[in-house]
Image 1 (cartoon, rainbow, N blue to C red):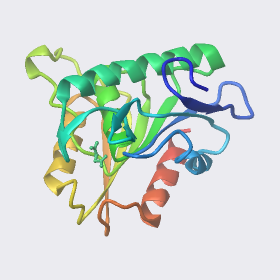
Image 2: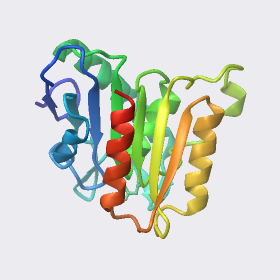
Image 3: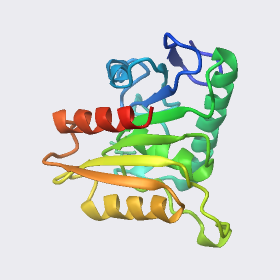
Length: 210
Ligand code: MLT
């Protein structure tokens, strides 16, 4: 489907009221790439959009200036666009907008955490695979109460990832925790590529949030 602002695939689960798994691909992926991972949350609806930014022909969810250097204004704008898409898709496909969890890899993980920080409540939680800090929230703009209480996040990153230094992972975890999220971090003996341990973490975590 190409409407609602994003090329996307939607696959309804068998039961009304099911949770919805939002699949977010990495740089150069598309709406089809992550579909096999939909099976990690059996019975869920699956919503899989394609990132709208092109970097030398490769789809992404936001612009970057160089590897690991993000265009922060674009990240925030695109996070709002994706949040609006999720709300529009919930209306169109009649899924429960309060039961959307993300499963994102790399650039897809980064837009998932950006949506959490920019539009708290749109995602109930997420599995962030090879995730970085999408942007630094403005501490002066933060309200006294955490905005992400009730939001659950699991991060699964690689111990020897050349793109995501360990300090980034820890920083992201702290930043989400400061906003009130419940955050788990898992380390894989891996670089930026995913490995079986990531899928095991994702599967266990997704089954625990049903
Ligand atoms: C990004 O968002 O740029 C990533 O984490 C790295 C990548 O997508 O290759």
